[in-house]
Image 1 (tube, rainbow, N blue to C red):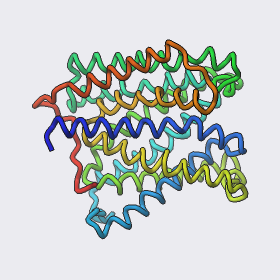
Image 2: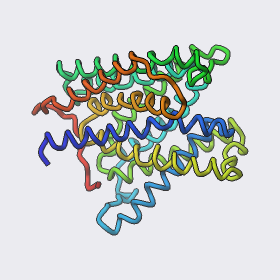
Image 3: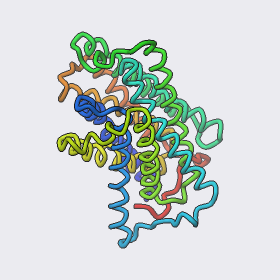
Length: 330
């Protein structure tokens, strides 16, 4: 595949992943209204996501999808996967707690600083060049994201929407922003650590990460919220059905696509394109939660699309070590 076509394919993959991740805002609100805690939501989402990917991998293994034996992994691969599991769990728990302790707008603003973290770290580590087109794309995407998030915060609060529903608890603003920044740091580490397990096929790596996240999140949920919160979906068919959809369409598929995107086009481009997520999230909130879309949000969405177009059209430089190989994966 030519570099231009590979970059286009990677771009489309990341945009689809961002769009699927954007459904979590609507899905999580429904789950919380049914009595599920954020900890249990993370645990169920990761569990079903892991089962979904492992099931597909088992079926496709006979058709050529490779599985690397755990014993064949070297120390760096194993340790990198462990890092991904730990930071993945911390990321999910932190961002969902941030949604509870501060406004959604501030939580998202804090979390979406991670593309800048990835870009800075990639330059320091000598992995990617942050030249003028990429700097412009990064700045445009962050500015557009801020417009999308802040453009609707006032309307949401006045209408009793999502920002009002997550009114901060005692000391919530500072703690919530801190949690969002912790989630951003975890996401940046996750992206950067993905090179450490590059030898592991994409589907297997993501299945292992989700499985590990499920175990850790379940333990945390039992300790913090009690076993009843984890078992709640078994007594609610509607909630269980919702979680099945969440696990497959908002965990398994977008997580696989996200890692695939990182391996195809690198962490910086992937981070910039993932800022498309708030655009889709705002559109879904308007469609399903009756939240108003403001002109500022529309302008922010257009700005993010311009950034995506810029990062897609940028030529690949010979000295750019951005791509992680796709080793035998689909």
